[in-house]
Length: 219
Image 1 (cartoon, rainbow, N blue to C red):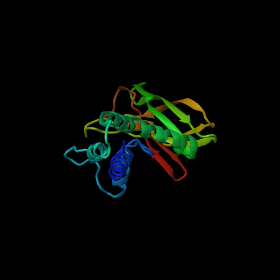
Image 2 (spheres, rainbow, N blue to C red; image 1 turned 90 degrees about the vertical axis):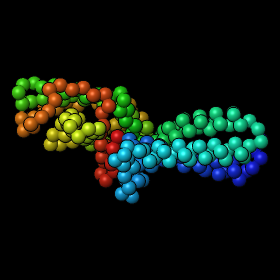
Image 3 (cartoon, rainbow, N blue to C red; image 1 turned 30 degrees about the vertical axis):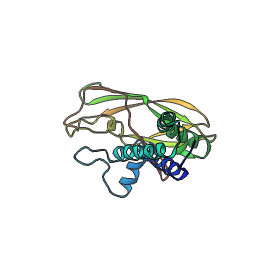
């Protein structure tokens, strides 16, 4: 089936790199963006181009080229399998890592899409903020960490919402081994010193920062 083993290994290497740079771990952004940020290179320039996504796509297309050249037959089946690997394997690798080798907050999975925050004014200067966050500790050991919130802006004129929950002290969380937990947080927020703020808001895309000692994850 494999006619050119050298081409096949090149295709496999390119596929691994293409998939690895798109893995969203340990932060919510792709691993490739984490590397670029550490190197002080902007992953998303002013023109809006997604360097990591474009690089991943190019590497994947080149890997398909070498894959089809390495096989004697079954080209369509191999391409289909290649696509399935790209879609499903990265998430499976992260999940397996969290269940086996990861410790502390790196073993905690945060379900951002199932989490929600709601804000409502209760008077002229106070706002009631309430959040429900969904966590899963995939390790056998108990984990304790703090949580703060941050707003992911798309426009400069957007009003701060989630970061209003960061009043004075962070929230302290604890999860037992193998525990899945929906944590309910509530805070009375003084907005009297803010010129502009929302009167009511609800968001189902809750961005948080988990921190334990020197470890930090931005999710």
